[in-house]
Image 1 (cartoon, rainbow, N blue to C red):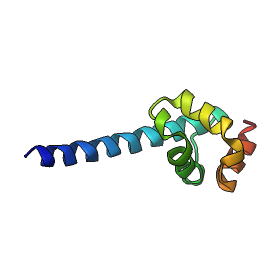
Image 2 (image 1 turned 180 degrees about the vertical axis):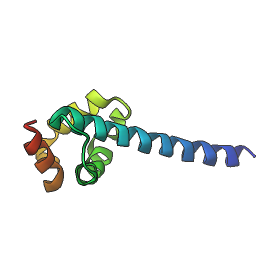
Image 3 (image 1 turned 90 degrees about the vertical axis):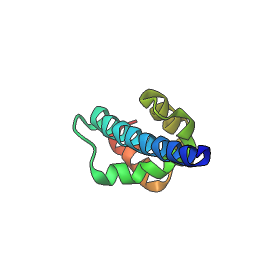
Length: 87
């Protein structure tokens, strides 16, 4: 029974992180471009957030700062999003 709960809790945690990440990317793109981020922008940076800044989820400002700090390690696609935003 305990193992079943732990598996369920892990799924909830992943779902919460994914929804938080989606919210972050929407807010990030909104602030950067004064409009809601496109699906393309979210796809571009999602892997980098998980790879470089997962420990910062759900803090939107910390994730943004983390991505900026790790700009040299960003994928080309995510770096282009930051270049467009002037960040």
